[in-house]
Length: 293
Ligand SMILES: [Zn+2]
View 1: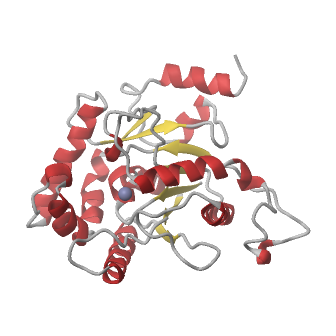
View 2 (view 1 turned 30 degrees about the horizontal axis):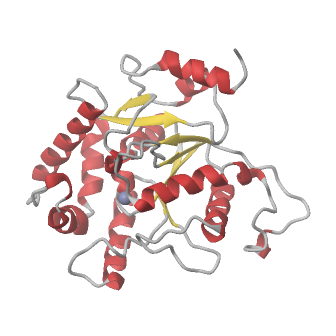
């Protein structure tokens, strides 16, 4: 099985899907890939953009190596990476995502949510990635969709390409609009995922406390950080209406790509906290989408 997370920034993955990926890798023998769609250039208050890009790239690659997850920096057909804060959902981004998805062919694809409540906040890059994934989903199995951008992929014997099941992650920028079908118990993966996010020192010890997001203090040690990030995840539980001191990651199933059966989801996903998940309503929705009612 192959699973891919497409997200906007270096460090997004660690806070929304790293525990679930760890379970997939160890319990399902899956291969994981994280695709980062911006260079992270804006994510520091002291460094130049050029220096920030270098630091964040190194941190992201080290963090993903800890989790044994592959790392892909999304590159546009013109050779550039989208700049943080400036992703344009257009031909070049769609072409790059098309190429990435066709190359890796994940069974399950995770991306940010696309909030429909216009009162909640957003991060412009997260919404851009979500919108782009939604727009590219059908074209994944269209072999000549972007061959003008990638002439080397032009072929007269096109191979059919798997369209993945696409799931949305939680997004702290849109707190209040998040929902879930699946809560994955990642308590036993917490130590590793906290160590992965600890690698992002330029963010958790420098930028995020400065910018004031999450009302963060500066963690002095890894032990401090584990305590802080646990509290943050327990706040996420409360937002999602989950009364538990265990750590969960939350996902919603879309019909953007392949629509799975409920049995397929239950068979493939490790660690589903079935007592917390609205599986009956998910089953009804999936059956309706599959015209099985
Ligand atoms: Zn982000």
